[in-house]
Amino acid sequence: MIEIKNVEKSFGGNKILKGISTIFETGKTNLIIGQSGSGKTVLLKSLLGIHTPESGQICFDGRVYSELQADEKRELRTEIGMVFQGSALFDSMTVAENVAFPLRMFTKNNKAQIKERVDFVLERVDLQDAHSKLPSQISGGMQKRVAIARAIVNKPKYLFCDEPNSGLDPNTSILIDNLIMKITEEYDITTVINTHDMNSVMEIGDNILFLKDGLKAWQGTKEEIFRTDNEAVVDFVYSSNLFRKVREAYLKE
Amino acid sequence: MLIRYITQIGRYFLMLKEIFNKQTKWSVMRNLIFKEINDLIIDSLGIVAFISFFVGGVVAIQTALNLTNPLIPKYLIGFATRQSVILEFAPTFISVIMAGKMGSFITSSIGTMRVTEQIDALEVMGVNALNYLVFPKIIALLLYPFLIGIAMFLGILGGWMAGVYGGFISSAEFINGTQKDFIPFHIAYAFIKTLIFAMLLATIPSFHGYYMKGGALEVGKASTVAFVWTSVSIILFNYILTQLLLGS
Image (cartoon, rainbow over all chains, first blue to last red; front, side, top):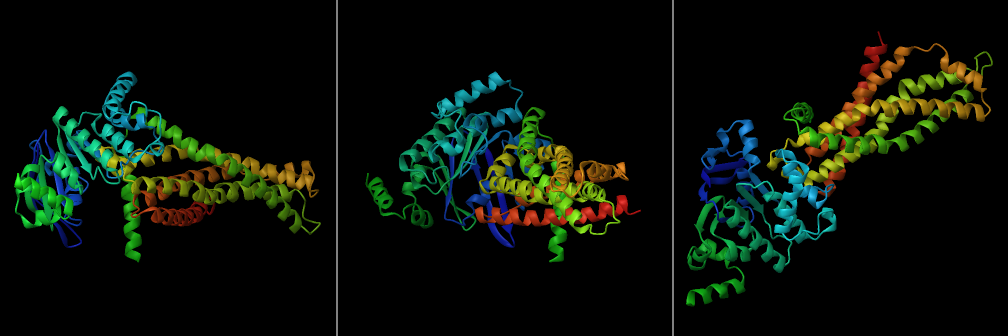
């Protein structure tokens, strides 16, 4: 579980996060949504320790990040898996080497154990034939799956995804969403996804945090988002005709 | 402007400190060092050999063409080639060329990693990205004197070939010149300079790549800025070291 208590962050006198408090529960896919500039990325980077909040606390299962020693912070980071928007795979490494990287860096596993684990996770993301390919030799969707494999290979407690569907076709996008959801349930991890994709919101949003102008404007589940009368959420989520009609149909039922 | 430069210099020294913090696992680092030796040293052998050989030849020809006074002995061609190559050409001139070749490679590879979030990925995983990326380059460039040693040998060989086969001097006279008034400390001086330049070559381009912001265009700009600053630093340190080691 990740607990955020009154987190504030500014850049050059411009307050981006204005006191956000929420809880991201374990075993659930927690989504952060909101317009560009609403503070989603800053919140995600604050959770990852890339940005340091000016005030407030971020607790990982009771461990307050800002109060941890440098070694404890590094230890905590090994419990984090991250899927970047552009996948962020290491260009010079093959798919298998990319996935093996966290194991080689942070475990005492021997080569056979590493190979076994890499084979397992690559099979889990349906990429058992891509071991020796370079990231430049595979498609965007496959790169995302490799990034997910790399993020989960060291059995993380927390999984963060920044726009995991960006640049993907609808089918691959659904595949990635389902994969993340299944992994979250199977491994009982705390997953936090920063997304603009409304399909994801409807499909996998166990807990949705809507940010507006650096504030928490709404929070609820994918079922609740259909029924909410919060104007900001309705304007943002149902901005397309299709989604508006889907919502109307859902409410009529 | 001045404050910006001072800030950058301070940031550079903080980066140097961070490079030696929290070492990457040796089993991983070992492979990185071998890769960097291949990318930075082995891959530079060809261009260094080519430039050294021909510049050595040009130094010998230029010296020969300027020795018009019959009272000046011909062996001076060999002497001048040896002194120019060992004292300045091999350590300094080659290092400035390497600031372009190695420097732009280092800045653009690290800069691209920054742009494509690969450095963020390392940091999020808890890896000391500076140690992971820059430390192996520093270790690999400890072999840089080996490259400069080859440049010295080939520079003098090029001078000998140009002098002898160009009909400017006999082989015996040239060899006599290369042995004349030889001061062994000059070799030590050249290699001390080389090691300092190696440190500059590894760290200044890394600094510009690591702290760059923006996209592909900025990677190109960072490479250019890195080349300029590495060259300026090499020239500046060359002056300081020459004054310190030979000036007194």
